[in-house]
Image 1 (cartoon, rainbow, N blue to C red):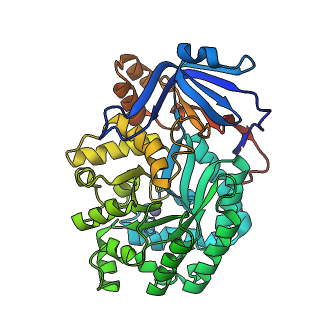
Image 2: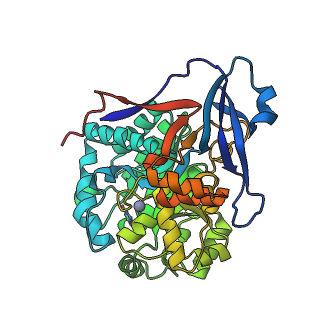
Image 3: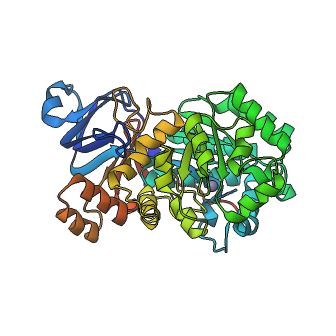
Length: 451
Ligand code: GUN
Ligand code: ZN
């Protein structure tokens, strides 16, 4: 098994990384000047941070004489991808066939999540998981753990070892799930507060308050989530909403007083900036207004929505309300760790709704859009000076077919579209975290998960 180690910061030796450089300042759906692109571009990096990004000739005079120059000419340098919805404990049950969400949870998900009570098991999967993110060019993520506080500890530990920007939280669920995965409103809140005190803001790590979804939390537990959200206003919040028709029916029975599924969360003060709602397929206009007004974000998870037959995200209505949109793989309901494959599926979901999702926008959503939603855009997601130097190098000739299609591309949009529709982990040539190459190495320590 391979693990990714970050070459220790040898020194503060500055670096200049040359290639085709692209990043986004805003959403290209609404702005003409959304991105900056330099065909012969360069990133100037010092102490793991971006000093400058721009045209090589224009910036060459500013590159320090002692800089190490890394040449990726011909390849595309973009900010590391940001996956805003992914379950690390579901890594080993990805691709489990099921007629739909609720059966899939009962049959595969809950039994697998039970295993994360064992810290050694959790740590082994967490290590593989972060390596797999990196291998796919994902350098930041908002991740789900399990109900066990130790499962969040395990992921924070592995994230810290690899120095990636990552958020997670212990899942909160105190009803309608197997007893072996159940907490209580009191223990869930106490353990969440303890994890926040130990991990939130530590290095590149952040905490996310994580109620699984309305059906598995009592009203007392949802109220305690609202209290946590108020007590810790700079933490993130993540949950699922309006993913599946059976689930929605269940929520309406459990919460007859709520106007809608989203309204359940709204009633407990869980809509705010930094709150990321997975799926959002069956929102209505009032829900969308509330999402937009409160600054909560959508994690669109297209490979999961197709795999579980959940439904098609409505891009048209999403834009009408200017929802803050991001992309999530939702592994293991989702079928790939690759944000390129996730773009592929998103494009097709949009197409089924008569909507053209451009490649420029897909790359925005997978980088700056995610950073905006998580409140991290002054750190990652773009090459603004001062940001952390997390970036990836995409190879337009990574596969024979991609090479042939790339040779025909006459515009940036066409080249990005080829990456999105034909690319996957094979297109990710290099991954840099805080300016250092994350190189896969054989590691005896990364043992397979004990069973
Ligand atoms: N709803 C509640 N839990 C889950 C989960 O683990 N995955 C997905 N896709 N939906 C959920
Ligand atoms: Zn999910």
